[in-house]
Length: 499
Image (cartoon, rainbow, N blue to C red; front, side):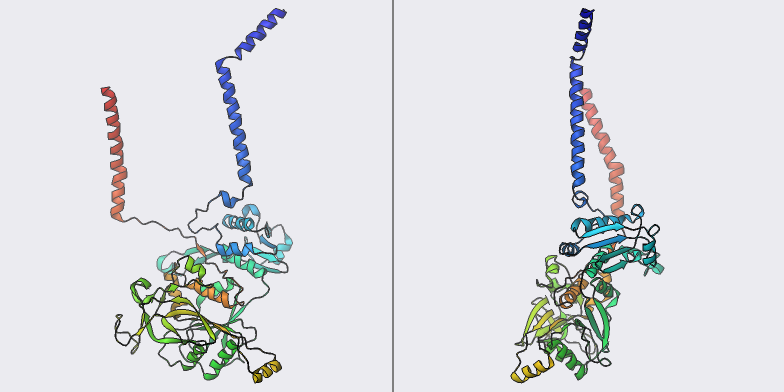
């Protein structure tokens, strides 16, 4: 009996010692190892932040945050809570993925979801907000971003084309709200009116809100001077002159540490007092509209694409090789004031020249005798040094408690900079970015950064193939390629048959 059991055991042992069993064992072990490696690899990948493992392939980069947002988040030193008014499982997917990027960029950002249908307190507090609206809060400050401000629809062309466009402003709204709730104050910019000034337009107003700058109108004729809470003045392309008293009010405000953005455009009116404001800061306008050389204009010599100088205000635009388009620009000339430092922001080519306007027209684009030779500046930052007071002024300053500190002026010589038609027709130009950089520099004593971010389009960009090309590609794909495959197969078959 023992001998029989030993024989069976020996037979069973030999059955497992076959080549097939050994090969199967090796295969099984290899499969187990591969599965273990795959599980370990997926576990490790799962611990890596999503921003390193996923790629934003959307046309408008909807899930990608820009450098302005990254810089703001990297400098955060206060905790910020972003609350989405929706159940997480039903919240907007695009917004969710964008919020994940914010959390990954800063440990101070916390995202949570609050369902008003369940949370009675949230339902009462935010009863006017729509589902998927966002509440950004830090300390005692909070900002509510309505869902319909995140997705913006433009119906302006609906009645002519039957279509409308939708844009996603998630990053712009969120970044602005974070800056707002973590900021100590809100700068105020006063826009002077009463001299035929141009409106800044809805696009600029939207960007100003994102920059958390309050913009108000100011009529110097009816107001009691410039308000004490004014952080910056805007003089936007006046077409009639200031009075002597108004010009003195502006100059005195600037000389006592004020800031101003002055945009000048062509006008056939006499602008003697307006010119005094510019002269007080070492600048004057050339008499005529500038014509550029071929490398610095678009289609026509007066459609100017200026050189962007690399300064603190324009460094981001210069590094990106951005383009600014300013039709019918004037030239700015330095008058060489000893107490004013001028920094060129936008400049002309060496071949630029200004042509005088006669009876409202320019006879030719070509250079003629009597034209004013360049080069010119199209934008200057003018900074006046601290005034040296004499003994009499020192005594009066001590009594009044005021000190003359000198001011800062950014002069831009093109009313077209903020023209909404130009900026909507050429969305790739950086006119508004340049203007908002100037606002950021002067509103807040130069400490603030331009955090205003443009909306991102959701409209797909279709590739239109000309009719001739479509016919060519159809012939290639439907006739030529199948023939090549058939002929190649026949050649291979024929060679093998002969062998």
